[in-house]
Image (cartoon, rainbow over all chains, first blue to last red; front, side, top):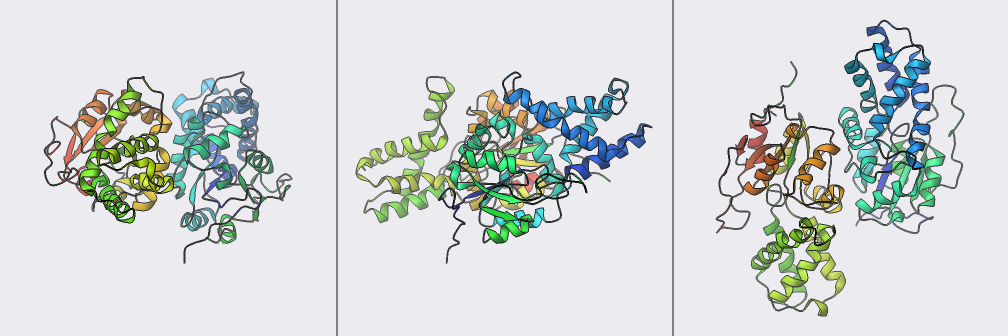
Length: 248
Length: 248
């Protein structure tokens, strides 16, 4: 008996590829970045609230991409945006980046390449991969996503970075060009994400959708994205549970 | 003790990624295509010399890409070129493609997605992957290379198809844009290939080089590429032997 792939009620198509938002959905950016920020602060004799610093650094992410999405700035990679935002976050915390060692700042900037997976991610992806193509659908650039995969052991089939689509989610081309590289119809691709806004844009672009709850992505006080806010095709509390829902 | 990556004498840099030509170097296209051509001919009541057909189909590969490399034609994927060349090869063999079922021709065209690996490929790639990034550096498009990897069990870290660099080897951008997506200097990337012309172009672009002998790629009467024709950094008779040379 052949495997029957999950058929999305919203797209009417069998799902061939399950692609994942990464930051927050597959990996725990807050814990990973805070850990490296704490080590950096100790090494350089600064006092920093590492979790607050990670939150501030991350908060600059959407505004930085917005300049590119709106067309007021040409495409640059997320590594470049993270590096600019790092300087800004340091200044917010009373540290002048120009007085710090450039190589050390570069190293801290690549903390986004070394984020730890959530406990269920590797097992869940390996299960899904048995029957579906798995890959990231992230605003990360290819080299960031590749390092992340090697460090965390994420068993992707393929990595299509935002430097390949040359655009940032939630613009429709981010989803559509990714499906195009896979030679799939949008409705044959499922986005799995912990963020309702990402899923809204994916559905708008014609993709199948799965919500994965990550209620501590932003720490113990998280208020957003605690539950699905749309009738997404699937809802799960982990990637292993998503694998079950997909019959994988 | 950390692993010491191989340092290329020609580039003077440690190698971080080992990228592979695929058709002929990692997979046995002639056997794989001939097998599907034979099955196709039987199913449709034609008499075809399956190996000769595979050779003719493959012989149309370089001229078809040349139109794109020279700029007389805009970029189209290798799947598209293979499909056009299939019609031409069928006519060479006295079969009129317009009288055949389109879906069956499409299916035969994707025989290039289902090529068998050489016996040493999977084990050799898995060894190299422990210490280096591994991926294809092929004229295949992403979906072709992804299907090939899933079918043959090729353990790539990353797949950068020619539809991502939007050019074809041996043009320099094919090598340079691939290194760029990996955020590596050209000299930190090694091309491993069974074809001296590919290695010449890779070296010209600044990459490290490894020759892998595949003396039966073109069948028992092969006359070209039986031996290295340049002072390539490494020479091996299999990918497992290359892994040894790389210390992996």
